[in-house]
Length: 131
Image (cartoon, rainbow, N blue to C red; front, side, top):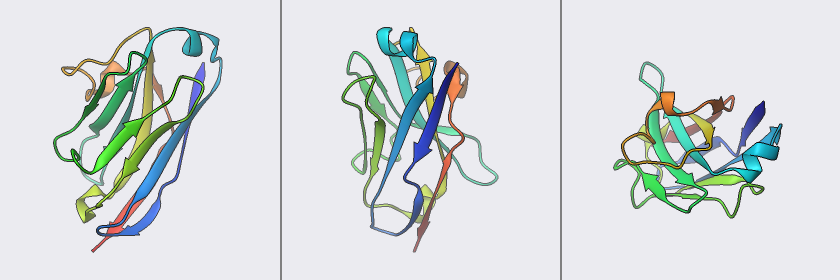
């Protein structure tokens, strides 16, 4: 089993920034040695969980249209944290943010934003943006 732990949530003013991180622990041997896709999802109260960004071990990355130009997903390698840099935040970015991972899979444009693509999930970290 792989555990994912998110950090970095908090409060920010509109136009401000937050950086989220996600670290893997547990049975990470296969996680580190195989190819993988990692992603950030978010869920606001009363709304469905939506895919925000994804990156794979090949270096391919994807961003939802709603965050393009404002958010950046990055990870140096499997043993380093996954980051989501969120700039120019808007109140509508307020949500619980979740890290997700799938081993032995690259990310694909058609599936990166679908929750069922991923096996491993973190507990989430709250980001709140005030106007």
